Length: 282
Image (cartoon, rainbow, N blue to C red; front, side, top):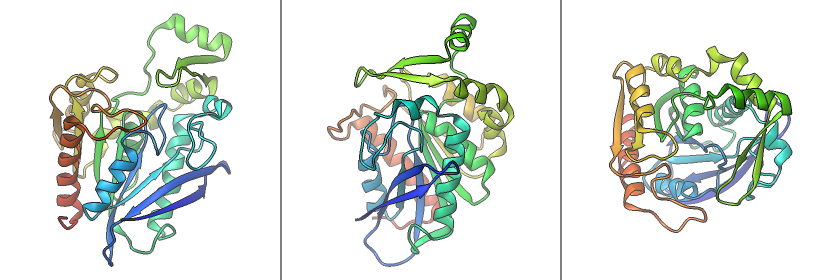
């Protein structure tokens, strides 16, 4: 496997740090761009392992940090809480476009085949990947892991009113104990861009092959949300249920190795991308 780092500039002029993992074989490679989830980053848990496994299977893998995910340096963890507070879903969607444009223009590596482009995302990143896939005709295949079916996760009016009053909604990073602030920009973005950010609408629009991978025991995003996405797709999406798996398929950070649930998710995903993107079998 060949591993290279890259840095792009977001639409707002902020760095988007990323990793490109390539098969060692000379030639043109199908490419999969991977979006991390909420409170995640490109080096969280299974992501480096996933990139290595994709590359070993003949697929170039692109992982990147959203520009305002709170990670300052290329290989860091969440520490820039001001950036985290200012993040929005529309910014993440624009960041994905920046990465896709670089891939398609050959700026990351000339061996990446723009005609064989796949998208992948975990959790909230699965939603961002779905939005991108529904709006970018260049995307020929999609795989989502534990993806949300809607972004507006808070329905309690009192909580929303307090968020509006104080200007911040605080979430706890259970891994680090950090209090992570979400500003009003995030709330206003969801309320003001419902049509662009509607995931069920995106599921109805996306017509290319899509694999929905979800654990039956997901404690964060209920399995019913996977069923909602598949139903909205009109049956075009295929559901791969991982029996007994939780939200991260048993993976933790720092990564301690793959679990049977994670391996099952990977095998289904590799089969999907190989078939659609015509990647060789390792």
